[in-house]
Image 1 (cartoon, rainbow, N blue to C red):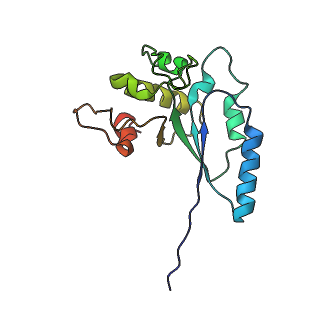
Image 2: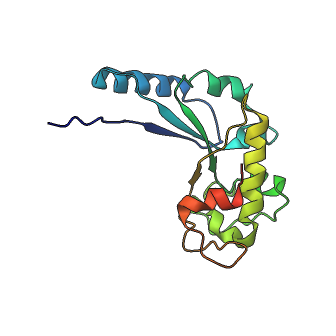
Length: 169
């Protein structure tokens, strides 16, 4: 008889908008761990716009660290927020926008075509500046870029290879 090991990991998207739900996140983790009877690592996909703009939340890094535990992973999560796009030196596009609020949160990164790499690199650098370590980041996309993004050689960039090719560690 063989034995198998079940690995459970929960992902959390930090959208880059506000930090009001930290208590909910802690309660959710506690409920999941109670139901499983074991600790569960979380992967925190963080959009670095917390450190941009005129209305910064108080100490975003401290707030994020307050819910990150040993064994959790931190990763890059990118939306087309105006401040993030313009901070990368790219002209902001307001459409198409699935939520229609003008912030860029709902603008798919794929509309930036050749400028996606600059946006991702800028976002990665911003997040790295606010982390204690300098580990590489997995990439979580807000939309499916695989159909639209091509590498410098013109070949399609599969989703899993996208971060490696555009964001070398």
